[in-house]
Image 1 (cartoon, helix red, strand yellow):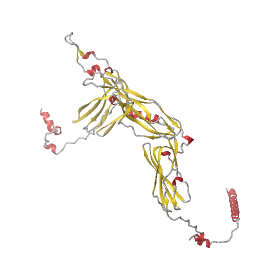
Image 2 (spheres, helix red, strand yellow; image 1 turned 60 degrees about the vertical axis):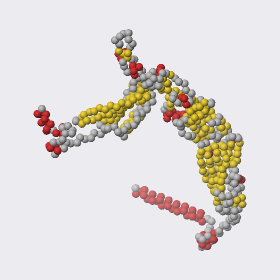
Image 3 (cartoon, one colour; image 1 turned 135 degrees about the vertical axis):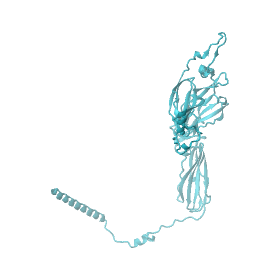
Image 4 (cartoon, one colour; image 1 turned 30 degrees about the vertical axis):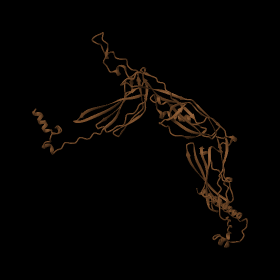
Length: 503
């Protein structure tokens, strides 16, 4: 005892926290321990479990306080069941450390090899990443007879003392029933046949009755959609993408019954050739739930499975344009649009004519019409401006005109645009109906100035030499140049001959 008291007196730094320091320790403060940074890591998950077991995703935080962390991922083929938190305290060299482990449990829907996609979590601002893996879910082990106790009275009924999940596992598929649904997948077009260059809207839709919403759920939609969009692509058509896929369904009627329609994809196609548009059958896998035959409190009322829906193929026939004028005229339900900057322009002053089309059709196929040339009318432009709308829009061409004589300008004889109306199957020529009246005096062209009137060339021409030069002066210059080249070649040869003996 005296020895222990002496040691405590010699080592006041080992005193319990909260005791007042002695006078000996006041002059020599105890050293401050180094701060250990917090460490966060993902714990390995099991690679093999039984169908009645649990799959876990956990992370460990060492030497720090948990501030916040992101939600655990949703794993395909598994369902979240519960979360546990474990804290372990360690004392190292007199310092206390705590390890916090948070574990998320998952139960499998069935047996087999389940692929776990890469995921990431954020804990206290630290990003934890997990790679893809394969989890093998095996069959449930047979029940252990030792978990059932024998009653003292052999004639009494047996009593089980054990965990129901350990004895019987999770709810068996035999306890669930398959409920029929009325959902279907379809590729639909707004018209069965179109002319070459006419637009047809084709969409991929999933139909579902309102009462079947609890039975179905989308499965891995982000990975299933791109291959289907690739199958909808047509190499012989101009394709305009429609609205984005919508998670909000539309309420429609199909064969007199009410349905919820999900728009998975929708495009507008303008055939460039007379070849028909073929859309192959498509497949969409959904999560289909089975319902518990006898619902009980505390039981999972649904058992998830998979069901694949197939859409029949679709063909849209394409009709060639009469007269073989495909590619030279626009096809659609168009009407002309025109406007003038002024109805009474002045001679020599510019005015603007806006002429174009508006309606349903491929605006990219509407080409600018050429304005017929007239000697008394100067034309500049046109400048194109397009205002797109679903399935069509407006396209205008702006011309700048300058008239050099007064009178009425009949624009319908100068400008025309030929379109094909698929509703009537005929060609239509669109012409401006506006006739501007040009006012003012006729402009007389100014006479061209003579060279002597020019301020620069006039004095230069007056002082120029008027002596006639011989016509063969260029031949003489060429002859002198040839002689000069021969003389230079001779000098070079002589120098080369003189340098040879010296070498």
